[in-house]
Amino acid sequence: MNSSLIDQGIDLMLFGMGTVFVFLALLIVITSVMSKIIVTWFPEKVVEAPTRKKKPAITGAAIAPATLKIIQAAVEQHRQRQ
Image (cartoon, rainbow, N blue to C red; front, side, top):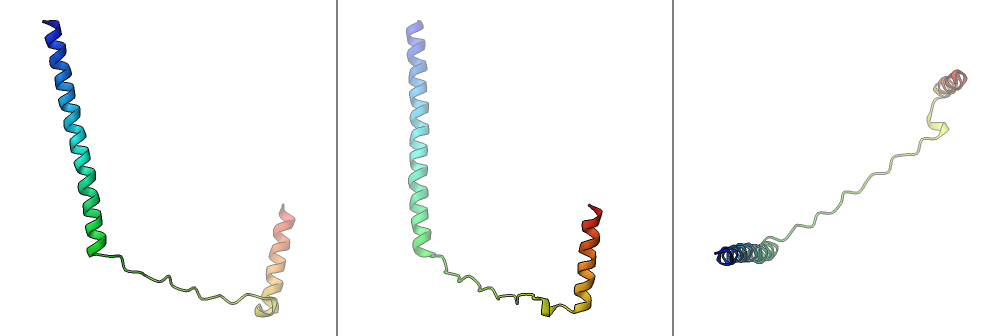
């Protein structure tokens, strides 16, 4: 009786593993076919990347002298605190 119970367990295990293997194999095949169909019928549109506008470089001449002195004073005050 034990051997038949073990045989039934092995049969059930093989049937279950076979079912899962067949299901996963079909899933892979169907997904691959769907992917090829989508790529063929609905190709991706090529979108060009927008070009960035260059920002003008800020130079000492672009900042008013009064503003520059205020910034320098603030930096000096900050450095003295540390």
